[in-house]
Length: 262
Image 1 (spheres, rainbow, N blue to C red):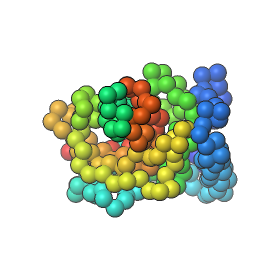
Image 2 (image 1 turned 180 degrees about the vertical axis):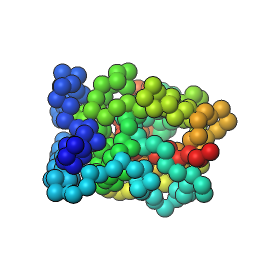
Image 3 (image 1 turned 180 degrees about the horizontal axis):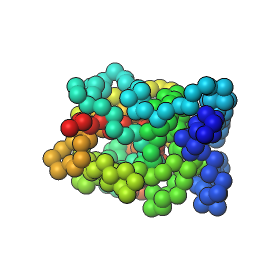
Image 4 (image 1 turned 90 degrees about the vertical axis):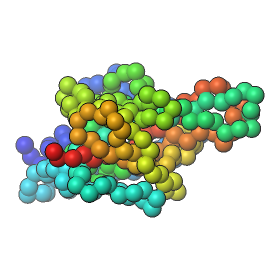
């Protein structure tokens, strides 16, 4: 396989064969359509440059997660000694909140999240700068987590699902036919505000914080720690004034799964 063909296959983009099922980009629903278009343009321009570069490479890129470099930010604790990256996924879904009608001035209360996870391990091993732009692009496309269709113009394979089993336990199900990494109930370990340059959601919602999560009792497989980084959108309104009882805020993020090798 030629390097250029390999790179495009690895990044799994341009799913023309699935065009009828592709999520839509409806800029009329966006608070800041210019920002959405800028995120999309930035992603595809960088993708084009990566493909062009691959055409002149003498060696085909290799999807080796030992070469992947997870971004860090002040406030997040580093991965524990002895752990290595086992999987990288982009999550696309909603951060969920609730409001009490009797307290309109109160802030919405976090009520978990629901997202589909897409396998981007190969992108992580080849191009960190391209990987960090995937959530910025993905959050701008309508996506229903009840489906398993493509993520915007990408045909990334589904690698799992993310949801909450109770108000404080984020859960990752990576026990898929093509992956079989296990299931991971987690507890929050540390967090840090997203960078000021982080992409907003379709309605201008700010990016949710970056997180480090640690596996709780009941986890299966070897995953010990999970990081949520490169977040886009997901933050709630500042107050419940004029809001419904249940609020779903569109978001995307990159999740890094660190595990033991035993």
